[in-house]
Each structure stands twice: as structure tokens, then as C-alpha cells.
Length: 309
Image 1 (cartoon, rainbow, N blue to C red):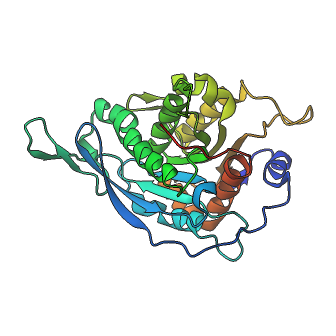
Image 2 (image 1 turned 90 degrees about the vertical axis):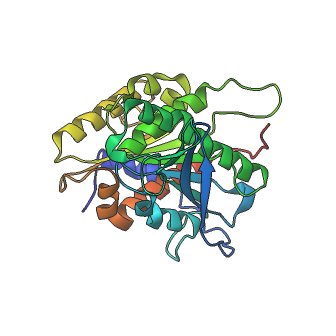
Image 3 (image 1 turned 180 degrees about the horizontal axis):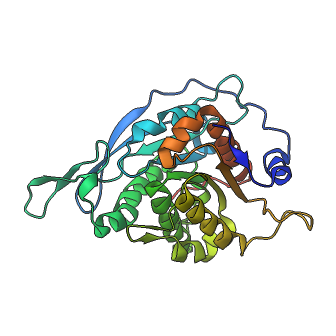
């Protein structure tokens, strides 16, 4: 699959405004850790944490797979984020792959009666999708705050890669993150700096994009990359709608360009695959684009580390 990049000249500007970062000194990466997180409504989430050898200077990337997919499909990108290969120029980053409720290994829930029930992706209700934003992502954030305060990563350099359902969860949670009021002492919120949306849906079983994209910080301060296979007309239409909504609030790179520097759209004319499967087929080529975009908008800017209240 060969990604077709819209406005190629501008994309080259996006990815090559400055020479690629020199590869950072790379200490030995720790083995990936499988961790249980308990949400406030009793769901046990399974995540895999890839600790960066870069410590508190490290950006962190959360990876959210599509409906009925599991975090295992995100392993390749997470490993590469943590441990750049010999040909990679990016600095090591921390990564977290997540099984949202009802997916992969996140299928256990403690009921009000105290008994344990099972959650199935095939029987999710609208309230479950909302809870992915309100409960699952908040549990992930609490974990990241702990790792931030222990000096393992810089939560102020947070990127989220979401595919399909994961894109809807990522965008809606980013709106919550940017809506958090600033504190007189310490920092809360405004951590999400980059969102990579793979095959975003305008409305995913009640998780809509419209209000989230209108949130002031999301609309103007978060960098977006949107990827999809354009042989699926509905997927292409939804992705274009997300792109158009964001483009309204963003200045162009120059008078000669209509493409904002922090908004990039990538489609491919050779596949109907979407979401996590699009990423899987795109392989290293899609990973290259995503990692370079995250590096430019999350790693390279000066976002200082700070502990959290």
C-alpha cells in the first residue's frame, strides 16, 4: 500500500521544515510490561507499557485500536517508538497500548453486587462507548501521571494514535483534557499535543466528533494527522469532514499554501481497509509518517516537564 499524500509540497514542508533530529543516545529499553488498570466503574483494563530510556524528557504515545481489535495490533509501532531502529532519527518515546473495555483482554468487570461480569465488544451499548472516554482514558491518565511523577516520561508531551473507534475515543478525551481548568499551582490538562486519527468516524455509536473538534484547545492547539483508505466512500467522507472542520480554525503555512502546518491528511487510493487494518497493511511506511509527525509536533517543541498535583 502506497500512501497518497494530499498537497505533497506542503507535506514535504511539514516533515522537513528542519533536518531530521539527530538520533538521541539510546540506552537499553526495558522489556514491555503488561499492567492491569482498574477504572472507577470496576472494569479491569489491560495495557502494555513500553518505558522509554529517555526518562522525563520522553514524549509518550497512547495507542488505541479499532472496534473488536486488540492492543496486540499496535505492538509494532509501540516497539519502534520505544526503541528506534538504526535507520530511525526520532528520539525514544514511551508508549502505551490499550485494550478498551470489551476488547482484547479487557473483558472483566466487578458488578454492583460484587460479582464479576464479562464485557463483550459485540454487546456494547452507547453508555459503554461514553465510558471509554470518561472512565477508561481517565484510568490511563492516572497511570501516566504516576509515571510522569516518577520521572519516566513527560506527560506534557502526549500524543494519541487512534484507529476507528480509537480515533473517536482519542478526540473526545482530548477535548476533556483541554477543557480542564488551569491550576494556581501545578498542572492539569492541556497535555495532548498531537492526535493521529486513522479512519475517523464522524459519529461512532454516539461518540460524535463535532463538539470535541469545536473545543477551543483542540481546534487550535492540537496537531492532527488524518489517515484513511479512500476506496471506502463513507470512510473518505467522514475523514474529509473531520479535516474540513479543523481546517476552518487553522492558518495556512504561507499565502501560497492551503494546508496548515499542524494539519495533515494522508489517503491511499489502493485499499478499502480502514482503522487498525489500514495501519497493519501500511506497515513501516505508515509508521514512518506517523512517527515523524509526532516527533515534529510533540517531541521537538519545548514542552517542559512538571510534576502533577
